[in-house]
Length: 457
Image 1 (cartoon, rainbow, N blue to C red):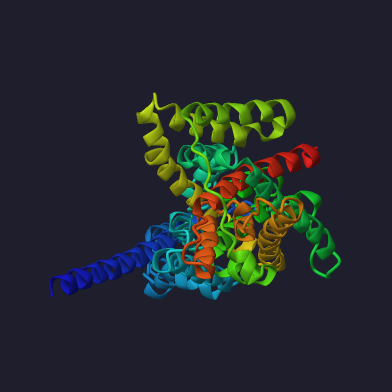
Image 2 (cartoon, rainbow, N blue to C red):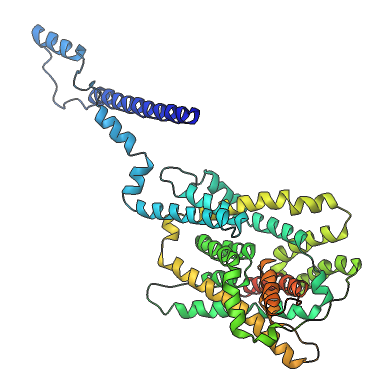
């Protein structure tokens, strides 16, 4: 009962406010007429110097008499003006249907994140950002609006993706990769999705209505690395107008790993291959864990400086964790800072999902190419694992862990382990798959660095 009374009171207050606004607008329109009349230009011909006394009195009385017609209050005009500032008017006029469609898309993202638990940390902020920016007359996506400021000072200058990479580094464990270094090859093989899709984008330009530039093609191809922050980082540099579509495709397909990867993995492997039991990995010492992020940082600085912002932040976060001497900073990177950056990153990406940017034929092409990229990355890892078994049959690799070479950490590793357990209840592949998964994280950064180095000019 109390809730109903509160809602009724709020509705009455809104109605009273709209009526008062209508009256004020109508009154202002009425009082503007005399001012406009006073500002009218005087006739060019001069009146006679001597006017009759009666004529002067008539003019004076006319000037002093109120303009009753101009001061009349028009409630209809006032309500009409108020109605033109409502969301209903914005949705029903012009291209407002596109904004309404994007509002529904934002609600769909919220449903996938909050109800289906598909990457909720990103899809929920992106969903709200999509709703915010597509509300007519809301202004949140303008230059001085909240989303506009977040995008300008957090994403356009690349700060938020790099902060997220610090957090990812602090959450990552290189132990499984160091225990079995050969799985690093699987992380590299899974980048087939990136470079295969790059050629696919070029081929797609042959279709009417699609015309991607080479930098746009590079931004779309990074979706194949299954690394959301890297996709956002590259698209912010090469194709910021496509960032919304690219980010949604990247995170959506990452969330759909349990649905996309298993059919591909089963298609490319036999039952006997899925039952392969891998050797127990050796224990990894603390010194190896501490030195490894420094090693990849040095290699990046020497061989691929264009990837240094991403790889450097990633190595910094991991070194802070493994050194163990700055535990407070490590926990901050893993929790508070990571969460804050993720919130703003999602809202900023949602800002790029404005109707005029998103409801285009290019968006459909990006979604299809993103699915192609993800599928190619999964297939590339599995097929290369099978090739490794042909070259080294005495120490076979279960091809299922090859799919974890994409950078969807740690979901892809869990999917590999799940399919291994389905084939053999005693076949635990999680640690081996995590090694390939971390290698895929590094591989996606290397792929992005190569693309930035080759196509930046």
